[in-house]
Amino acid sequence: MTSFIDKQFEANLKANIELIAVCATLTEEQLAVEVEGIFGQIKPLIVHIIQGEGNALRDLSGTNFWAADTDWDSLSMEQLREMAQQSGTALRDYARQTDPDKPIRFEDDNEVAEFKAWVLINAEIHHGIEHRTQIHALLTKLGVPHPRQDVWSFANSLGELKIVEKSNEA
Image (cartoon, rainbow, N blue to C red; front, side, top):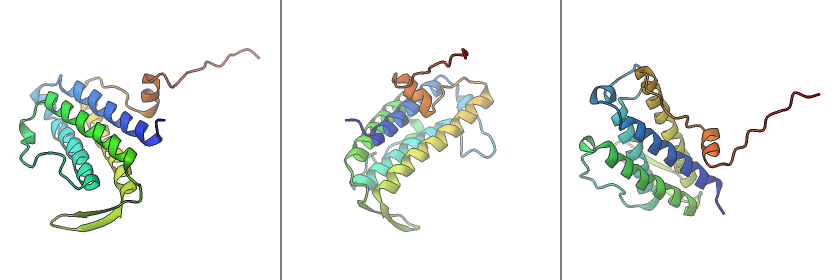
């Protein structure tokens, strides 16, 4: 049986892959477009999403998902798509099997944080949505069509949404 969390992460993965496919058609100049109020340029935003997924997987599993020496700046869109496929699938699998109350401890040079796994899993879904929305804004500024990536569109793509027209007859 498919769980709610499976569907969330399947939608997240599909959205990442679709958006990377659109961005793979852009020129270097288009990938470098900036808009005030948006976190960054298109390619760095894609990298940030994928790195974030790897960081979540590290925190859930206790091991690094991405190699420490990965040269993120030199990766092609095809390589980023493959990495998004890997991290998106792994996140779905970890989310499925992880106890939501599992304690997680995060440490870096600036802070130590303790929280439960459900917080991290939920945050990762929102993180992807936030930055894909920023990429959509950049694509809109460029006049580049991009896919609808809302839940309704995902359900429709699976054949799990049926639009029933209401009859005007009284």
